[in-house]
Image 1: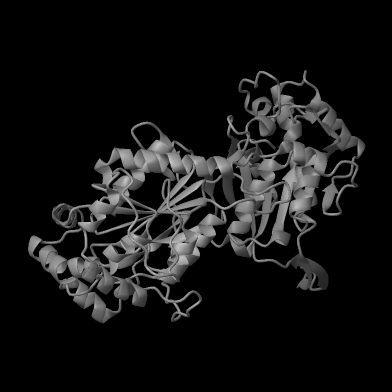
Image 2: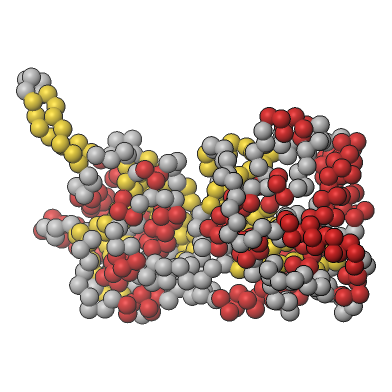
Amino acid sequence: MAAPPASADTAPSPPPPSAASPEGTGRQAEHSEAASEDRNAGSLDRLLPPVGAGRSPRKRTTSQCKSEPPLLRTSKRTIYTAGRPPWYNEHGTQSKEAFAIGLGGGSASGKTTVARMIIEALDVPWVVLLSMDSFYKVLTPQQQEQAACNNFNFDHPDAFDFDLIISTLKKLKQGRSVQVPIYDFTTHSRKKEWKTLYGANVIIFEGIMAFADKTLLELLDMKIFVDTDSDIRLVRRLRRDISERGRDIEGVIKQYNKFVKPAFDQYIQPTMRLADIVVPRGSGNTVAIDLIVQHVHSQLEERKLRWDMAALASAHQCHPLPQTLSVLKSTPQVRGMHTIIRDKETSRDEFIFYSKRLMRLLIEHALSFLPFQDCVVQTPQGQDYAGKCYAGKQITGVSILRAGETMEPALRAVCKDVRIGTILIQTNQLTGEPELHYLRLPKDISDDHVILMDCTVSTGAAAMMAVRVLLDHDVPEDKIFLLSLLMAEMGVHSVAYAFPRVRIITTAVDKRVNDLFRIIPGIGNFGDRYFGTDAVPDGSDEEEAASTG
């Protein structure tokens, strides 16, 4: 359906046919005559630098990260926009990149509306919508004064931070977290808060200069140009800037005539020839949008990935347990507590009591692996005592919901003023894949030793994804401690193979998982037994049923 991606190193090709018009070539001729096309092509060639061309260093403002609600509500469903499926195989390495769609077109051409219509029609759970409007450069005081008088050209390529756009899109395609600036159009400045986004199945990047950089073009798997009549665009811009951005009608018209229209003619319209598909009439062209969705579906089908738990199960059979694993010494006391909590006849009160005792012992054991340094203190008797003190900055606990949060009180009991974060990972019942649904991490977590808590680990899929999230937030691998009351050998091997520097600490390791990847002999559904909720019909562990362990 889509034409091959245009190469900026080749001679300009004719504009692509409209997606919904058999006479697309004739219609495109209406937009420009041969002479103007040659002139615009020259402008575009100057605009697009050679691949690898250097740019001046980017100036970035210092800001803290702030996550927005990761939801996009359409007329049919709610779509998660800040999560991602596990794009990492059983070895913890990336499988395939996301499918990136670029949406270009003039100001107020309906790009965002088309993007939302595509998202709704695609009906896939994980989508990121990235707007070029977030990436305006930080203005100098002189430029701020010009902007306040409608004398600054926001429709010129130099107004955008292409270095930040490219690095952000690259990370999103790789499934990594990114910090995206939030631009305030009223004050013409970036806000202090930045938002956090994660990769997804589909990334839609929209903006007036979406096709104005060679490196950026190479990151886009599909390029769509939204072609809307200039009068309609002007009316939309008037309505938007006056009602949403606090501008007056005289200023909007002045800016349109001085900057917006000339920029469209010189920089934006020429990029139509780089598009795979041209969508006339914008969001009103449902036929074109349907064709786009069909093509994206076919591409996603080719890239379809499933969390291969069978591969996890067979990858490390008969291998010795890794050296990064530490199992709490199985004393008669520890063995006795395991006997109680594994017994299906144990009451809920006793289950909670002895689980808490085990958690306390587990965390005390884990703290012994933290770095300590020599220090000398003076006792009340005036004597020096040569002791040890914690050599790190601070400790942060991160629980994998919901069972992991039961370990938080034990951590707080032994670590004064410990910071706590949470991660919710659940299984997609259609694909069998663990998916990130919620994330709350303390600031500057990259400097901490992180204790990652989950009560049971069977396949290791959820634990691996949680570790990946921490790594995406720049937590060093050797500063991550995975704690669990009970683990299966399969999960131990999977995590250790993927992340060989993560310390794995548990009170017991069971040898087997069954065909449903439940730990055998196991402990049952820890969350249900602890919280007193109804058990899953097959009696499985919560971490296997809800988060694939």
